[in-house]
Amino acid sequence: MSTAVYPGSFDPVTNGHIDIIRRASKMFDHLIIAVLKNNTKTPLFTIEERVRMIREVTEDIQNVEVESFDGLTIEYCRMKNAQFMVRGLRAVTDFEYELQIAQTNRVVAPDIDTIFLTTNLKYSYLSSSIVKEIASYNGDISFFVDSRVAERIHEKMRERQRINE
Ligand code: ADP
Image (tube, rainbow, N blue to C red; front, side, top):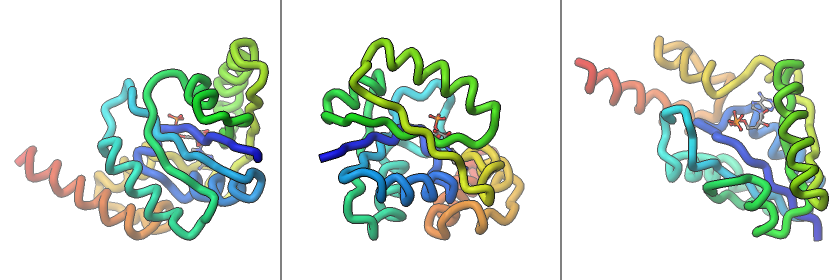
């Protein structure tokens, strides 16, 4: 059985991520979406909120599981007996960073291969940060995230505004 891990911050999950998840779920028997806990940036959503949102928007995909993890991604893959790690590539800027990580991981864990999926052109500019930025100015984010995720983001922004008032 082939198992792949798709790791990331997913703060929050965007349509770009969902596109990668749908495509990867057809390539492997089992796909684990692993939400990284030790985030250096201050996240908008807690780890539990991020996991819950991804579960919600992927509930129709049978072979997908969502978990949170802490520490080295490669160790997490080992623990899960995953042979593959999935990463999305948007632009050349992603490539340099991702290549460096993939090559390092290959030295540490030659048994785990990183598979890169290039983004759907529709979402090539899309990142969680851009979505948060637009939402902070009360802009329309309906094209970028699932409607349930959009609602949560707007809620968070309203909460923040109340705190700042
Ligand atoms: P990280 O902090 O690990 O970069 P992200 O949540 O930003 O976490 O991204 C997780 C993965 O999804 C990365 O491989 C990233 O390149 C990919 N990704 C992010 N946005 C998109 C998108 N719009 N299209 C395709 N892949 C994407």
